[in-house]
Amino acid sequence: MNDFGDNFTKDIQTIDAAHHWHPFTDTKSLNKKGARVITKGEGIYLWDSEGNKILDGMAGLWCTNLGYNRKELIEAAYQQLQELPYYNTFFQTTTTPSAQLAQEIASITPGDLNHIFFANSGSEAVDTIIRMVRHYWVLEGQPEKNTVIGRINAYHGSTIGGTSVGGMSGMHDHGGPYLPNIAHVRQPFWYKEGEDLPPEEFGLLAARDLEEKILEIGTDKVAAFIGEPIQGAGGVIVPPESYWPEVQRICQKYDVLLAADEVICGFGRTGNWFGCETFGFQPDIMSMAKGLSSGYLPISAVAVGGRIADSFIEKGGEFYHGFTYSGHPVAAAVAIKNIQILKEEKIIETVRNEIGPYFQTQLHTTLRDHPLVGHIEGKGLVAGIALVKDKKSKTFFENGGDVGTICRDFCFDNNLIMRAVGDRMVASPPLIITKAEIDELCARAKKCFDLTLEKLG
Ligand code: PXG
Image (cartoon, helix red, strand yellow):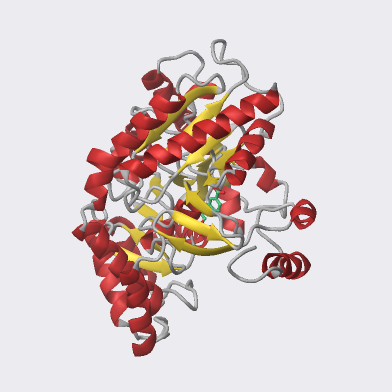
């Protein structure tokens, strides 16, 4: 039985299987079992059509930072819908929310990232960065400085541009060939690729792979480097502290623009407004999405620093780029309210000083000694947990992501949402999570890790 009548779940699953093609999903196997129908959310919890209450340890897809059913966000959207549901910003017009949101974002971004270009998704923001940095060098009289460097195992979205600079080999196998003049360097994945070096030494080594690549391609040919402060979809890879300052030094030395993809790290996830602040570097340009509106409506932005913006404004004339919904007034109104709540309730300070450290400590306390857990890394309210075959000798499972998938499925069946990335379990709960809820998350995770171990025999 459920709240909706006996056949509700089945009926939705049937039409879903017949007509709804899901992203990143094996349709055949999903259709066999039927998708779980999510019907309601409140705080950090979701409910499905069977009445199960689920702890959302992923904040949707790393985005519902203020949790579900925040009345002020809903009210902001409703009011703006009544006032002006849509107007564009292409042809010499603006709207009040889009102008105000641009000002608001400029006030929270570090350095001189004061010019804000709006889009609707993280992927579009990344594509915008690719087009902007390449055109910047055209405006500066160096049209051949057009290679963009990303990293192996980075995720920057599913559009052609995002997939190209992203470093997921599986994605490159689908739908290519991808953009020319893109290169990839190694990731700062100390636990798996640290070569027995102390983390700080390995951080420098990983950064210097970028230097080698720039020199190999030619300093006059590299436009920009793009990276997530913490790789999210790649499994929550937290770089050693030496990594980002060294990347910044290298970019400055060779006059390569530095782009931060803050789609996951932005808006408090790591305990600061942006991940670049947590890791001590200043990008020339950054993308943001997800937490910008707490996922209530699709909106993303690119914050552009003075160097690039001034060149476009002074020399560029019209930049042929934009989206119908760039600066959508309803999404912008929600984002303004979202930022206001983050400020008024000091949520980011709380993540930095109290709830983030508590989350990391509790994860360690609960899971560190578990036979399956090789390593736990995280910052603020995001963490990655490596599952290993043998803890002492640090032996990884041969079969890639199978164990992660088993564990993820146990979580799902036990009303806890955690992501599996290969053999890494990932958590990224809403920023409003309480200490008691963190305890509950950890206890449920432990139970599911136990079930996984049991199943592996
Ligand atoms: N950059 C980063 C760093 C991201 O994490 C994007 C760009 C693309 O954003 P859009 O809004 O176009 O999806 C992302 C998105 C996962 C998962 O399973 C992660 C993302 C999206 C969907 C699933 O971890 N990140």
